[in-house]
Length: 183
Image 1 (cartoon, rainbow, N blue to C red):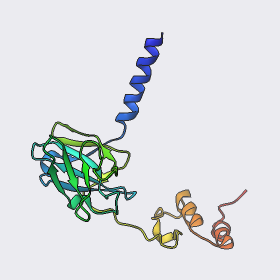
Image 2 (image 1 turned 90 degrees about the horizontal axis):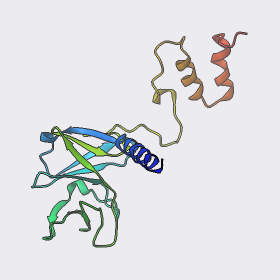
Image 3 (image 1 turned 180 degrees about the horizontal axis):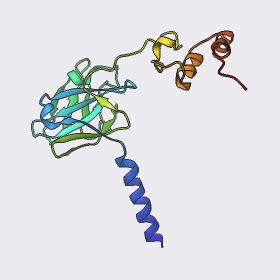
């Protein structure tokens, strides 16, 4: 029975691990050595395509001072290991491990090519173009920041309107005027 439980745990781990694969596009779309992939949470990734037609992925910001690794150079150290070199201060990061000769560590992501499609193992959804940012400089949402349902007779419309209204009296006003709280 112990062997069965070990196999079950291993199978469940594989299922959980495989749930984070993001398809980023066709292999033929990534000819340049470094391509920045944008994430909604700002944790962007650089996809590296080496001359031997292999792909690697790591965080696109240098952990030293945030340099743009997607603008860096790929260098071969001569022992079969390749590094991505930050264009700002020349910190190098191993494509396999993310380790730097300067003692820093960058996050790396597993990459697979399946039927000429590239997949990266990350929880973040990735895209090739920057994701437009919303103005959250004051830390508050306004009704304009959220697209309400077009119909005023839906729960989503009123929930959005109430949640985006800061004044408690104003929050209650639409409820009473539209008779949504009928007994």
